[in-house]
Length: 497
Ligand code: BES
Ligand code: MN
Ligand code: ZN
Image (tube, rainbow, N blue to C red):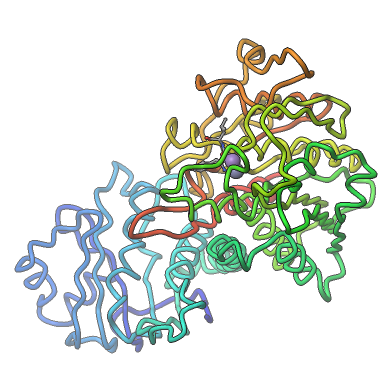
């Protein structure tokens, strides 16, 4: 998809579809007004007839509009203005989402959107362009690569022109570049997330990581096999793969775009390519969705895809703990005690609490890179979905500055997290009679005790944990990976450049 920012003339722009804004109270944008004037106020009449008054979410597609060069005209409602004439950032995104929705059934491949006459509160042209690009590229995502005859899509975008003022085209162009890079990362994370467990195994994730690094000067990838992990003492991670025929992999990615001496930021992803629960077997209903239990890993790979696209001057380490959680005859049993790389012994009271078991060893391994901050990303607990639903990722941290920076990045990127407590009060729920720590803390505060477990392995570093169990994928008719939290992670990295 070719995307550019230009000054556009609403009347003269020849395009397959021109998109203009209308605000609440039937207030036409400058572009919509020009179009209205070019055709004896026909637009006003049509909008009135359809009771279109500019509320956010409204859209009206006019085929063969008169008086302008465009083949189609799409009017989008952007909602109400504030005193300064600006709309909210939420409304901007909601309204833009209506563009692909409205064009889904058309055969439009060349789109022009006039954004320069829309002012968004607290946001600049760069932000507007970036959000627009992310929404448009995400709308083109296909999840039917494994169908024998994928349906012929109608709405395939090839060319997008964003209309801005002269003063803002340079800033918009920057937004387009960042938006495209983030969209590619999101796309990769969605694609990997949606792949079934029989294809996307730990070995598959490892080869994806290697593929990303191919031909790259700043990115290198190495994969630790089970033998190497055993030598490192990763008894906790290996207790999860023990019950599977697929070998576990520890994937180590190093992006070195910055100075040699600069400490990296480390991203650690949970990569359970299928979670049956192990011997503590999960119930059958909906178990297919546990193919998404590697979405933390997918978000790390997606973020590295974006890094490769943008080549920022910084150092980032990505660690992926990849394994299946299966219940064969060698599987770990409830009550088994294993020794982690950090030396802590763990009583595995529930083999379905496997995410923390692979992450603790990956987090200990991460120490060798002396990172200035570590963020782990994991579909860790069903309890997090109960607490926060599908809108916010759960954030836990032992460092308040890091937590605030992540929350802010989530706001900017429209990929929000919400901070949860990590108080000492919860720690004693992990006491075990027989080992240093138990791997579950009972039904109360399940996402918090899971984070408490990880905190025992991250005492010496600024660390944050993102529980993405509710945000990484959608269920029901819209079942599919979201690519979250790639936008948040990229934003956090760029903010800390
Ligand atoms: N991968 C699951 C968490 C999960 C469950 C994410 C449902 C999204 C939807 C994780 O490995 C798990 O099974 N967690 C258990 C922990 C429990 C045994 C303490 C859970 O949440 O039930
Ligand atoms: Mn589990
Ligand atoms: Zn899991």
